[in-house]
Length: 510
Image 1: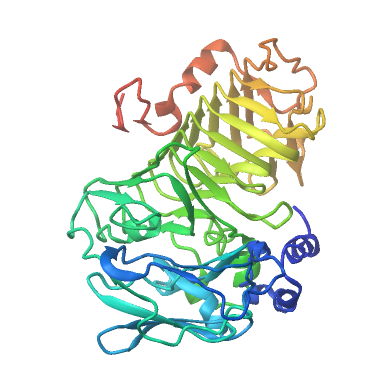
Image 2: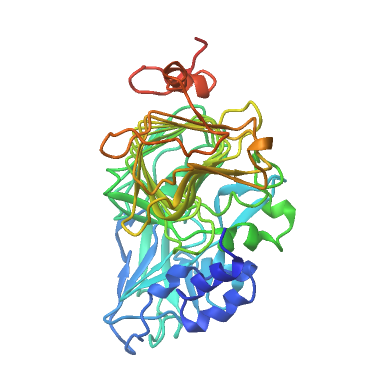
């Protein structure tokens, strides 16, 4: 793992100079994401024309709509001032972004609650500036069927005089889908029931018992998404992994162990912890997190936008039972894909450098590509003795051009988890995979007799068998009969087999 100093340095390099002292003040104040640096060092001209969106009451918009301002020139965010959304009927404030108030940079997401049942608040970036465009992500979904107006203080955007009139920026929200609707549509451009993925997830009733299908239109959805344990049976489908992208620069320094160090356990401890001590805080740092059972994700890219060296940063974290990822691209650097319960991954792509497939298992991965972006480790599986780990079948292990031969291990584990299971069956791998194949930390093969570092049928990318003679002594090459047994998802997943070619998407007894 990279040192904290290196991680902070990496994030600081992506921040504007005036914001760096706040991050240095401590992880708990790490409200300033690396992506804040997208604002170029220029000021909007005083009195410049600004296009506002949404604006006008002729057409209704999603209640979870972001607010956007497009300036005539590149713009930078100020260091103080307020943007306020007010109810048109009486002028009462319903949400405020105050650049000088640390509370502005925290919000509730998905009704998340800690292990103690208290609401958990994420640190996030309420205003994202890219060139001439500023996007404001409010702290909460607005009420449906209401009229609002927005005011902006002078200096909220540098060089801009602000918006004071209650008539300059007005809009109204749509009534939204009827409660209990099972087919929902998300469209960032405003053509669906919701503008954000989280808005659609939040509409699923607590204790849901029926499948709810959420279709996400093409576009980029810059948000943290969280599906809590009280919202099972959710299925999210994009328009294709190259067209629908969900992502956010969430990470350990922003919302993980480092950031939670000073937060009371009642507010910060993770729910549904599989490993009570190691997993106290690390559930909050993913771009897309799921604590619900029976969850499906298909035809999207999930991208954690944290830069390389910016600490542990899951793109997708699944911590429920029976999670399926189908034709999903999972993109990050460290800890990209974390799966903590029974999970099935098919036709997908995962990239990263350190432990970019990890968790506790059982995890079955088939017909997928795992791409190494730097020297490091492909997987780290922390299962208990006798418990299922990870089985990868018919996968391709590829690398970025800069990754050297022999610089990557198939899997590693430390002495806390001496029964780790990682199985690679019929894997095509490039020569970046080291001849030793596997790594141990804090113990060796003399005490690693319960390890299940297994392999069968490994080839290079051209299909030529790999020489496995130099593999870690306590790893093992399986027989053809053993490999056939472990190719069956139900063998690993305690009877559950969601394979499309079996027709079974349920636990089976055979």
